[in-house]
Image 1 (cartoon, helix red, strand yellow):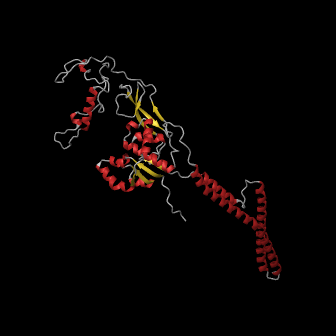
Image 2: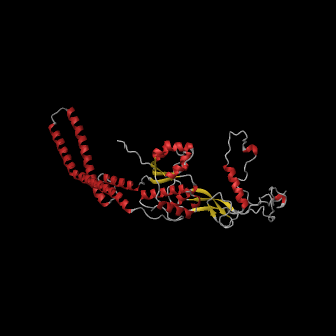
Image 3: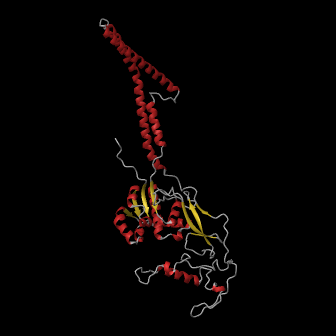
Length: 437
């Protein structure tokens, strides 16, 4: 009869962030087939403001989601861990609550934080699995094995006790065949021939049975001396032993108790370094290797996770470079630097010209180098020119354009495209002091 029990799902609890819900990848039906329970924080629900995504969450997701707020202790633990990894500055309060909820449910499902890391870069985990739970699980298995061995031993004793009974039955059969031969001597030749054929067949069978019984006795004697032989008497015992060994040696299907699904790189980095389970939104497999980018100062070697920075937070110079980095399954964070990286000094050939004062109209009237390249030159983050340029750039990006306006023209026609990535120009540029052909 086929087993009607459904197979266990690969994940018990999945904690969702706003990213998978906004992108609708994976769909809700796939999530329900992969896990037993879906958790989300109330702050993530409030964070979704897109009308389509909000409608999808309220009508489709919320009936299957369970909202839960993590405890302040879990939030403080994750905040401290993120501060040590360097991701605390780029993590919002909602991100910290998602990470804290994953940590809290992980400790509840696995009986503590024994499979996590307390410090980034820790070589080993915090501890070993609880021993009491393993003993409780192993005791019924050992009881089943002992019961099977006892039943097989009883079957073997019954089989060995049946050997003299087989000998007695064989002797009775031989006597009856001889008596039948004496009583049928006066019958016709045809009947005698048939009887002889039957008798010879019975005698052959009796001889074969006797030989088998003798062979069994010899095998029993041999099994006592050589324990490696498999005989008809110990066949069932060996089969039960092999089944018990294979059942104990075969790896049981692992079920992840808690897994988190997010698209934020900082959250993914914290999850991997703490050894919390992280699921991919496309393949629904556990992510064990993560690649991301950070900014590293070429002058003082300071690193920052804020990719919008233009100046080094430590030395204040415009020497930040984009560096690729990886986080492996062991939580090791590694930066991949260029082998022969040379800093480009182009544009620093001549000294900076003297600053010039402006006038009431704000127009340039000479000074500040050739073609006025030294006017409003930005060299530091705390300059008023940089603050003013950043405010104007932010105002331009936040400005809403009405597509139905008659005077509206796209940027490809007006030439208002930002060629420098939407950031204020820092320094003199590479074309000021460069050589001309």
